Each structure stands twice: as C-alpha cells, then as structure tokens.
Length: 227
Image (tube, rainbow, N blue to C red):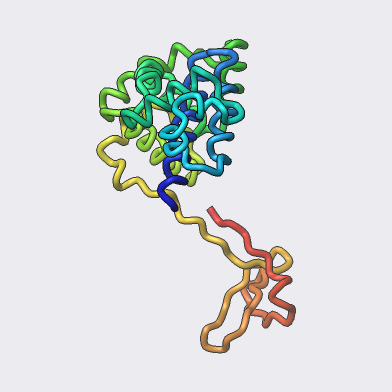
C-alpha cells in the first residue's frame, strides 16, 4: 500500500472508530458525521497530508463530508499522530466496549443490545462489574476482547453457552483453548460412506454393515458436519 493511501486509511479508521465509540456512549447525531467523513477520506484521491501542507485546515474542509470540527481533529492527527478525543473516548467507554463485545460474540448487535436493555430482557448493569474485573485482569480492552473471542470460539464449536465469568474460569487455559475441529463426513441416501484407499472407490455402508460399492457420481455425495 502506498504511503499516502495508508495515511488516509489510518485517519479514516480512527474517525470511524470515534463514531462507533460515540454511538456506544449514546451520542445521537455525531456518529453519522464521523462515518461520513471516514468514507469521504477513504475515497479521497489525494494524500491528505499533502493537501494540509498546501492549504491547511481549510483545504481539509473542502473534502465533502468533513466539517470544521472533524477537520481540526485531522489536523491534530497530522501534527501529533493521535487525536486526544479518540483516546478519551476509548478510556471513557472501556467497560461498555467489553460488554458490547461480549454480546457481539453471541451474535447481538449494539442496537439489539440497547433494545433488549430498554425492554429489560437484558439487565445491562449485571455485566458491568465482571467486565471491569476482566479489564483489570487483561490489562487492556484489546486483550479483554481477545480473551472473549477465544472463549467464544471454543464454546461455540462445542455448542456450549458461556458468560463473561467463563473467561475468568478459563483464564489460565486461554492459550490451550482451541475450537473443536469441524469434521465433515460423506453420506449417500442417509447412509454413511467410506473411501477405500486400496481400491480407490467409494462404498456405502448399509444398515446391516455391508460395504456396497457406490455407483453414483461424486456430486451425489452429501457432506455433513459431524459434531
């Protein structure tokens, strides 16, 4: 990737994350503005750093979807390689990020989580303390998310339910937790099949246990996931 494309991409990613964090925080309109600006910068054909060097903040504001406030944050990034507002939002929403990521691992979006919390089908406050404990244990939001992902992959591959507390229980085993291997086995007409390496042929195993030579086409073989 060219250097200018990487810079534009990095800024777009940060702006998009600011939008996500603002949405997580419950801010109504700003998330959309940050996403719009992120999309515009990703599609922008010039190096945004070169544009700023030539025209300053006013040049950045000429990009469609980039207003005065967001242009100032881009200017801050170009000068310091970070945006203070971004860092502050990450710190402020750390616990919410972990709780949201936990529910995301269970297939629940942020909007669905908010709806269920409003309906009180999910008691959000019940997850705050374990999320805080997990953050202290992991040392960062990123490592807490990684731990949740490992437990989720391990549990889901085995059809097991899991909670944030499961991460604590499995903490010392995280590096050894592996998703169960998905095994697909061949069937024909609901009967299992077996491949004979010696004869280089497929056989269908009858209910009586007999090996019946398979005379059909390979496209007729049904591969099923066996748990």
